[in-house]
Amino acid sequence: MGTRADFYVGVGQEAEWLGSIAYDGYVWSESRTNPLRKAKTEKTFRKVVARILADRGDATLPSMGWPWPWEDSRTTDYAYYFLNGKVRWAKRNDWPSMKDKQKITFGNRSGLMIFGIPNK
Image (cartoon, rainbow, N blue to C red):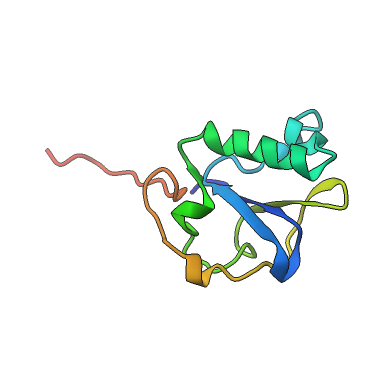
């Protein structure tokens, strides 16, 4: 399984979901020098998130639908959000429901790793 991450502006039911990734979602929490962590304005945060999502084959944009089998970010490994001039990540219980946007996916955007043994 991948380490998934969701990206938002704001928190609570009014948070705006910017997109998600299926693998290596922890890297921004571990690097103080990463551009995502250094964002001081919402505009910069949005630009960095857009760049992250554009550069990855495991990214999901809002136009593609919510990729996870769960209905909000409470189960996602990392939910990064921009609020009051800071980038944060935390487990919260007040993310917006994505049930109406849900389009569960498999493959690169799902974070599932399926291994098999070839039949001989």
